[in-house]
Image (cartoon, rainbow, N blue to C red):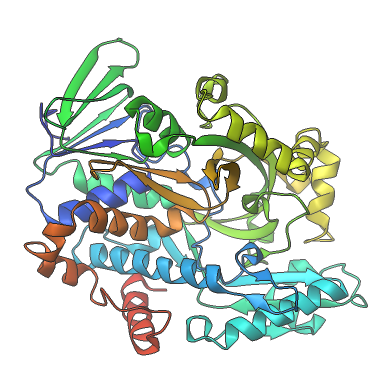
Length: 493
């Protein structure tokens, strides 16, 4: 049972997914005296993008996701984005390990497990790319332990289903990292809110939709929410607002009339999976196997054949198949996109449409795919698959960022923080790597918006949570390895 709703909370959370849970748990770990109020439209926490079946559950560390490593004109591979994602995941690991040590999470296996991460390609050009990618990544300490092979027999040992029924005469290649993970972000969200809700000064209001967000004369934020079902309205005055509402974050930014959000728009992408519940088949595949994305496809549509562990049971998941709707959330409204179209963002949206014809074409093709066409894509990764063993499932909604850069609208892939000029409000926009770097996002918000307190009265608590705070894992191999050893031991990964 949460505390009564305060009239003037220090912090208001909009949305009760993994982003809000991570920020709230971090900030209460730093200062238990802060009062927090959370508003969530749905009946419980973690039911939208954080819910296990709504995302891939990949602890994104850039081991297997080929879209994080671009190939230069000379054939070499740029791993800078992969290093960013990889080390941001380390921050999440530190935060999770702290909560396990402190008893906030009693059993880490309820939300995180070791699962090998693989990349798999075929065709001479793709094999050459994967070899160059491996050469660049394996030379860096952050990717120590990565394996590479072009031997079909070894690939069959790593991922038997991938090779079952496959033509072994074609050029094949794979990489594998045993340090990969499978993460149930819904379970993590529930664990954190389950710890936060009973605390004094923490109020969680479910079935409450935020309808108003405006400045008060003293600089605080007036947050108004309507209770779904009764229509009753509640209102609080917040010193700081954290918008972790997934696709709905854009609408909250617009409601706040932030100059910093001028020109921002959203490009919603829906998704579907093929899901296999057969325990015998799931037992024969233990890896997350990522391939190359189709030309023009968004990064979150990179095909992958995954092991998923949800509520202690193993499943297989293949996809995602992208699509387009005007909803910003899976349980959102068809009016979300038109309702968020404003004079300041309509031109950037049109420019993105003109500059991304291949993406629009790809999404249209995905929408009109038949079940047999979807199943055909699975056969590229599991040639002997039997269609009756797989059922279609709807994934979560993702809203890609559209923003102005150099006077023109561009489509941005990734996760981004948008904040008010006085740091009194922040919103998290975008998609992959998303939940995997929730710990890093929470720390960035704390550093940006509560920097003075981090440097003074919160300093000791900060260093307890992040023992390697301030050390750059990209260049400090000793700190990187020590952190991974320590967090791995606590998280049992």
